[in-house]
Length: 195
Ligand code: AMP
View 1 (cartoon, helix red, strand yellow):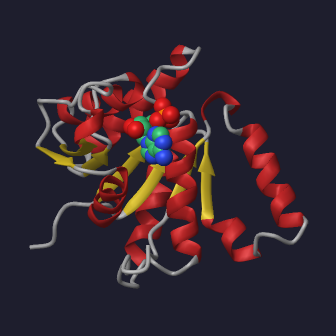
View 2 (view 1 turned 90 degrees about the vertical axis):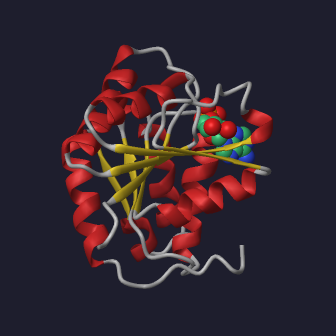
């Protein structure tokens, strides 16, 4: 039997300045849980990370957390998950998350969130995986970043296909639908041997 559809969510370890961010995290978590899918995430209880995990669990989904030992205190390792993997390094965390996920969605967040999104988008460009990479643009939080992606594309540093590969939407339900459709046609196996 194949395992349930699994979505990695990258998001802030803080809440940001608007309740719309937590609302979107809750809405996405609820949608993931209701479809019986699995959330793969950083394993913490803080900020939007905890919000999305709690929402998936409450809606009946599975949650796989992956947290480095050194962050167990700072990000408050979540004790109520389906699986919590405590790993040694940030690299192990990001690799295990990528291996366990069928798709990647970033919510509003800070430096860690951006680093994770660009890493999986660049791994896609390098052919290390063929899974969809997506951005939930809540309240226009990422508008300035999306504008810069257009600059990178227009100035010839990002190919048409890679520019278009990042799925962007403001609506959690629509984005999750687009991501699951894209994941269903992604066939190339992962190869993280060169990271
Ligand atoms: P932030 O968006 O900065 O609140 O971080 C969100 C998550 O990204 C947290 O779980 C961080 O531990 C994680 N993260 C991933 N990679 C890094 C990195 N290279 N530096 C800092 N945080 C990171």
